Each structure stands twice: as C-alpha cells, then as structure tokens.
Image 1 (tube, rainbow, N blue to C red):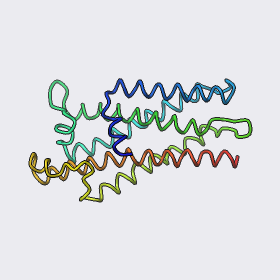
Image 2: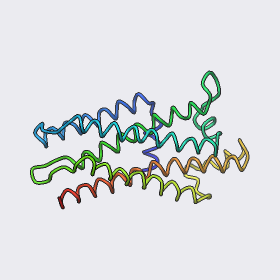
Image 3: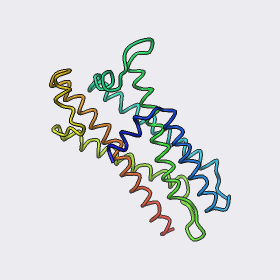
Image 4: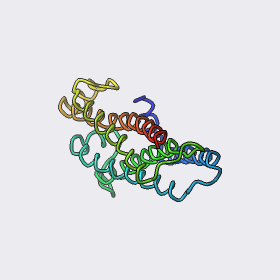
Length: 205
C-alpha cells in the first residue's frame, strides 16, 4: 500500500488532478443513478471542496514542521532549491497540492459511503463531517507510530544517505520520510474505517 501511495504522489500535479476528476465524475455518476438525480449536488461539492481545503491546510502545517526537521528531505529528496521562490515556500506549495488531492479523495470516498438509497437515507452533512476525523486520526496515529521506529528504512536508503549527508542528517531524512508515509497510509486506513462507520450509522438511522 505504501508503494502504491508513493507512486501516486510521484505523478505530476496535473496528472493527479486529472485522475481525481475522473474519480469524482465516476462517483457523481453513481450518485446520480442511485438517487435518481435528486442529490443536492451543491452540498456535495461544497463538502468535497471543504475537505480538500482542509487536507491542504493539514499538509501545509505538517510540512512547516517536517521542513524544520529535515531540509535535506525537500532539497535533495524533492529536488527543491533556492531561487526566485525560497525553498520553504516551494515546500508549502507542494504540500498544498498533495493535501488538496488527498482531501478530495477522502471527501469523495465518504460521500460515496453516504449515497442515499431507497431504504437508507443519507446522513446530514453536519453529521457526515464528523467522520472526517477518522482519516485525520488515522494519519496522525500511523505517522507517530512510524516516527517512533528509528530503525525503519522503508526503501533501504540509510547507507546511501549517510554517505551523502552524514549519519544524523540521514536519520532526520528518514524520520520525515516515515512521517509522510505514515500520514498517507493512516489516512487511507482512517478513510476505510470512516466509510464503514458511515454505512453502519445509516443502517441505524
């Protein structure tokens, strides 16, 4: 799962947006068929957008911290360098792009789980918003768990990094790498749990 997430984020931002739009259009088509066109789309799209913006803010705040932990992760790992735009601002741009896409995917998955049916009404959007806490909690918990395993080197980079930048800088680089992977993996797990709990809540409604 971690490699699949990493491969997805290795794609250019325009490609990720195109894939995201394809997913959203597919979900909208399914929603239209299930609800017979009665879906209040402006509310759906508003929810989608808010979750996407929330993901962007979350990612920017996270990278404010991780950039301080390991600037090399972004300069060497991401190929960023000072120029007309300082590195920290480039980091924030990348974080906003990645976080927005992740937030939109999470929002789309939760909306899909909330699709109304003939015998299962959809949850109100205020109640639905509470389930966003599941991917947030998953991202934080898994990131903290991976950060607490200093010996974990997912991609086997430790030796090469140590020769390139020194032992401590390599350890900091790998720490930030684990934090980022933990956020992605935890968000996926939290989204699956959140979607399952939405369906359970709808059955009880």
